Image 1: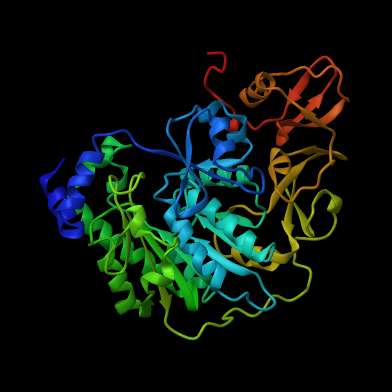
Image 2: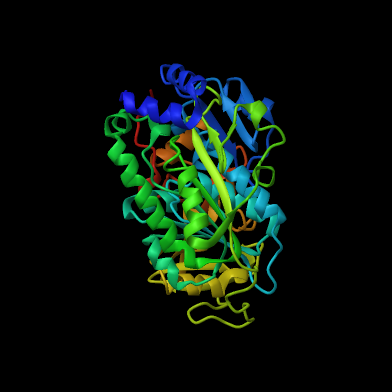
Amino acid sequence: MDSEFWRYLEDSAGKAAACAVRSALERPSSVSVRLNPFKWNAGAGEVGRHFSCSAGPVPWSLLGFLLDVRPGFTIDPYFHAGAYYVQDSSAMFVGGLARRFIADLPEPVSRPFRVLDLCAAPGGKTTDLATSLRDRFGDGFLLVANEVMRGRAGVLADNVSLWGDPNVVVTSADPAAFSGLEGFFDMVLADVPCSGEGMFRKDPEAVRQWSEDNVSLCQLRQRRIIADVWPSLSDGGVLVYSTCTFNRYENDENVRWICGSLGAGCIPHNEMEPCSDSAGSGVMRTGCGFLLLPGLVPGEGQFCSAVRKSGIRGDSIPPRKQRAVAGWGQDGPCSWFRDSMRFRKAGDMLLAVPAAIEDDVRRISSTVFTLRSGCAVGRMKGDILVPSSDLALDIMSAEGIFPSVGLDLRQALAFLHGDAIVLKDCPKGYLEVCYEGLPLGFVKNLGTRCNNLHPQDRRIRMDIDK
């Protein structure tokens, strides 16, 4: 490890903390998951039994659990059903901090509450935000999850589909593209690209790439990203700023720069803290936020802060009008969803978007490149609709759309692997297949065998017989 790294760390956190980090980096990484309460609402005992290990709570996340072993997530149908997300416990602190503001900010009049997750891939913070927003606002929210790198944006879109919330829109655009949406968002979460010190245990390349020059480069890039997106945050709106690095240059100094150069006030620690005793959990308070270091907390490390944009909060964008939006209509299987939906075709794919966000989806889609919005219902083949896997995974889809069949573990893994399965005593036609009550997707039962409709890019690639 570069000696300058340790000097930077001691400068930012002190010698004792640096010693704790040095010791922690010689030990294996921790393992943690965060549950999707709309699919699996369980306590530590049930979580431990499912993974055949000991499970303990993450102090700043009611839905987060630390595991004492790393299970085989790839061969767990619960994972493919979107029942949980594998996320570092330190990263969950960001979602906990954001939840404080989601709970306290007033609901806008006549429009959804709007949030932008600016650097969202692979989707951990997005799915955490989606849970908090739905708990607070029901279907009255819009969450835009953005990733500038198209390859990573595809992974983000898949993870959002597994989570199953139709109020999440996935985009792929440079932060500057959002400046045209002046004052649009009530909250922006920016987990900005950084020098990656929190990746040292998981990625040896992050260690090799660390340098003082790279820290300086990251600091400047982070400032550009925030400056580019700043116009899209409403006056009085909240920016949650986070990195997975430990030095003060990318953390506190950047928060001070945001406040001084862009016009914001740093929010006091007691208004940000996601749990009653963060210090007792090993979280350090810095000048502008919180620093989580491996060795002091179980996770890989995270910095998090929040600022409020100067100005009186108000609706900078005109309120949503109750009108039909071009391209979207009511012509679709409305009874298939538990919310009011609007439908449109994209090629042969039928898409459904919640009525509460239809205007906002149109505004977003006309401004930045959009990969995913609402729910992909299925593909039209003549007069027949072939159901999409996303319909089964969507938390707003109604029960009983198609006959449901429960699979045992062997059958579920075969389905997820893309194999043909046989369901002799089940109705012919399209069937929703489930594992322990969790929908996994669809098959078309021909009687002697089933056509597997599980998407190619989501299939298990490893040998499931080992």
